[in-house]
Image (tube, rainbow, N blue to C red; front, side, top):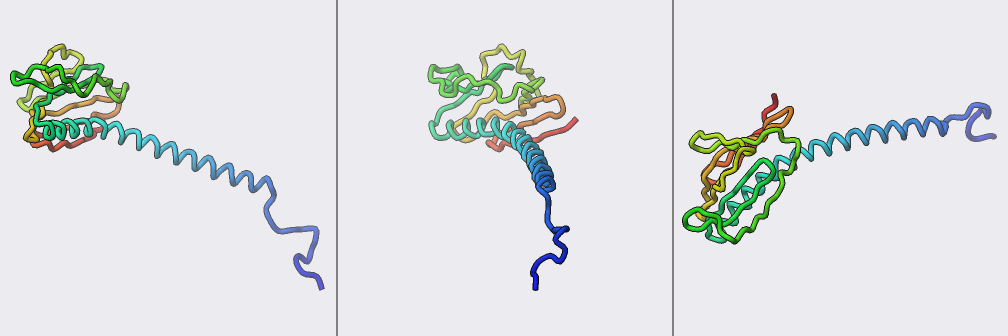
Length: 168
């Protein structure tokens, strides 16, 4: 009595070619999913980076008990301790840093009183935001205009920082 297939000319199973085609399809699908997930993570990291810097400046002001000014231009930004008359002191702790994304078309800061300033035109030596040791700040909204969306970082006076993204 024989075990197995009755007909030895036809065998059941997959050929090597069929297995390779399935593996290639699974590989391409996995790559596409990974790339899309990476793009979403990249956008989230860009959004959270400036939030973290503002939170850091708030905490640093509370811990040190000193007033901190945040300065910004089109190319970069930095923070510095302020003396009693709101002038920059020599103790600069947050060195000049370039913006995290070069795809930003326009950067606008809207002060709490309604005044707007485009950061490329900011030649003033005055700070854009002031962080106080009480945990408060001068407040405002930073708008970063990209080609297909606008990111608004709303800095409330009570150190509450919200992030909104608006698509065109």
